[in-house]
Image 1: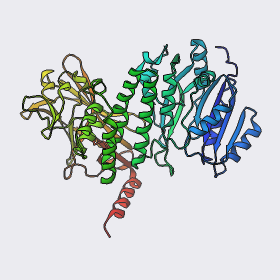
Image 2: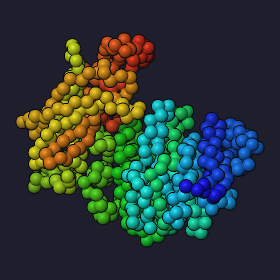
Image 3: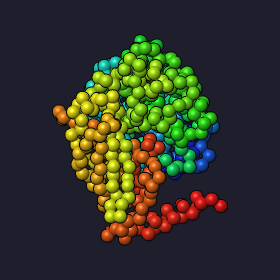
Image 4: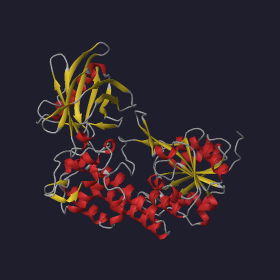
Length: 531
């Protein structure tokens, strides 16, 4: 493959990020001869970032530094500053705390030129630090190379609202006046992406990894997408989503706007609802009120687009209730994969409903949803024994749908290490029906065989006819069920195993090796003792 000519400008923006901005700039310069210029926009930093960039520019002729006199409070203004300054036919955007992987620019530029596309987009991976675990972002879009003649032909494009995993034809952006919102406007890339899609570009999607999004959950200053503890973050997110829909509607892209509203239910609403249990009552009330006002703008066609999806059911419950309610059950429904816990109530006419107290929220669409797409709920409890730990599982039937399908044939019980996705010990078990309208099974768990790390319990349910459903299990939290245990280990001497419920309610284990791990837990216990 011939080496592309210098065609691309990479705009790097940063504010008080001296610890990472040099790595971001170097990753752009390392893309090779396809990169004609790197424009680093410092948004009024006070930590020496601008001086660091200036020293880099003195040694690298392709690097140009623009210093803004004062911070804008957001990412849109510095990106616009960089966009105004570039002189290359194509442009990309890079945040100061992320990096471009090798070959990213070449892959996007080659595809854009071969397909005569105004936008080329590739796979972004979220890299959790310090573990290094990588999770692909919107992977179904990037399973294989594809050309999209117009965004309306691929509504799923509205789900990838990132601006950084894409290469844009500079003239296309300027011809359509496509810019980022100025000033403090969190989630500005949601708005920018809507403006791009509304302009109707020809797009090419490539399966190559083109962006590494660094996720630093323990950072002193959290990124906007991680700093969700205040309700203002939710208000900013809904404002961006509302603006994006308005842009698409104004451009006559009604189906794309509906797809964006569906994405809000499935992504934003579920993500924030999972965390409601972590917030105080004042936050919950403010969140609930704001969300109901936002969802009031949905019409019947919006709700009918995916009537049985967890996000739609979640939104209907919120809209039907003036005050927060059923938060534990909503948390489970918002999890991934979704779990709909009992009670499985019915209206007087037999129609499935959310609960006896909310009969206006119908669950009738679940009666025709395929079994492998149902929000099945499994309860899990760990029972310590003298020689082994027993795992008990109870699979709830959902309005008789499992019985209709012939019940579960079997399930593979598997522990997966969260840090790297590695599969631990697994075994296949059979469920037996119980009189209460559920299925039960139990099996031993060799906790000592897991090794150090955080382990999530996954079940792969198999049904007659070949249907499969992967689910996590709802952790039962009664007395003694989530008790720490110290176990002998041939490799580490001793392992400390701590079962717990994740913030979405699923059963997980933390395993700490050696005496150091045990001592750390003992110290935590002593710190929490009342004084």
